[in-house]
Length: 100
Image: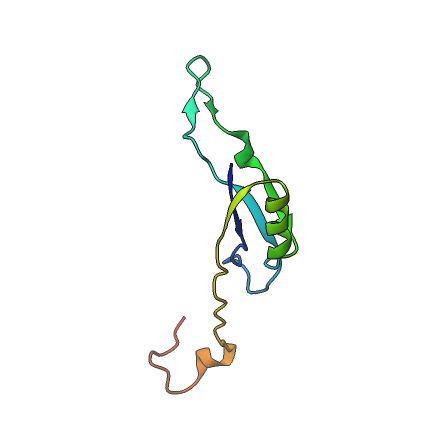
């Protein structure tokens, strides 16, 4: 059973940093999902539905080591903040003129 430890990226729908301080341990799918011949439902490994939340990367790694889970750590995505200002939309000398 392999797992990946990662810190999710910020949501594109918000500018705040809410829910971006947690680390997750998520099991990686090892086999393909197959369709059940009788009912047609997809079946597979249910461990991929497990997503554990931790306060730090070290806690997630300790959990994986304690339980004998092989894991890989994905690096954090760099935080790129763009300086934005509402009045800049209307300033004189813009590359393109502001229109409705």
